[in-house]
Length: 365
Image (cartoon, rainbow, N blue to C red; front, top):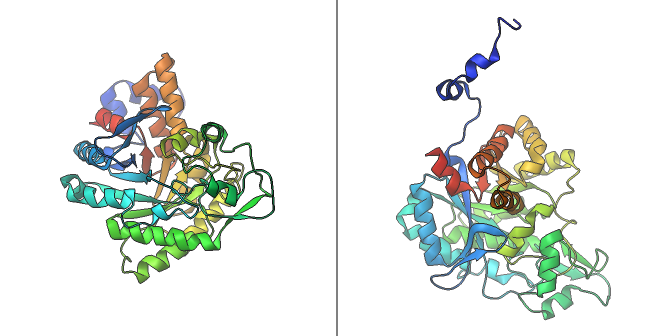
């Protein structure tokens, strides 16, 4: 039938009518809220590039968890800022590390019964060089190298942070100067996953993008008696400019080079499908796409091809650019926030990691 018999506007005449025929919906239980845990007590330090997002001491994180549970959120994704860093990121797998300690405290709270506690598994926040694996120097150079990184301040220089946060790459070092070792890194990554499971993580989420990490984690966790803990793999994680604010939040900017030798090229959709297929074959229970809005086509392609649960991470840069527009009065905050989340859900994400989780849950009721 065609106009005038068919009038599609008939089904848009009222909110009740629009709600009845709405094809895609959001609910608080499908939203995951990231938290950045830091040492100390009573610490609630706002991240300059991410208004409304904080570095939190564990006691403050427990308060956030209680609020998240009251709002009906699905869970928390935990990242850590250690007191010190070293070449091998030992704080990532320390049984008394910041996230491990946070998990134990969160598990004591009533909120833990309502929330899934998801632990990010990576080394970048804990290594002195800021990379997601072990760094091997491949040739002498007057610029940065693995040895140069270890002798630098564990917090890195302000200039290096500023450069890396903006572009994911610092001025010193090149791909020829160093290599991020894959196989030796797997031992530390799987060790990290086991330590987080032992501390109480409901889900472990490897984000490092090393080949074979899912199989290594699954084997190690099964051997240690954590066969019931699922793996949420960042299977399609692209090397993106949209991670800049996160690197300020997690103090994880590379001190030299960049991460393009292990994170994916943003031009490659077919390769993303291969990454997902491989991770599922190695034992991943769920997959996470990152970033979200610039890669909605990848989310859609994955949803059409794979039956596993799929989530998407609305990353720091997506959040920050919207917040910047809100501050300027260029966008209506509530409508733009909800539209951005709905687009990710419509593309095929069953759940969304987002810094808007609490605000969105309040809108959704």
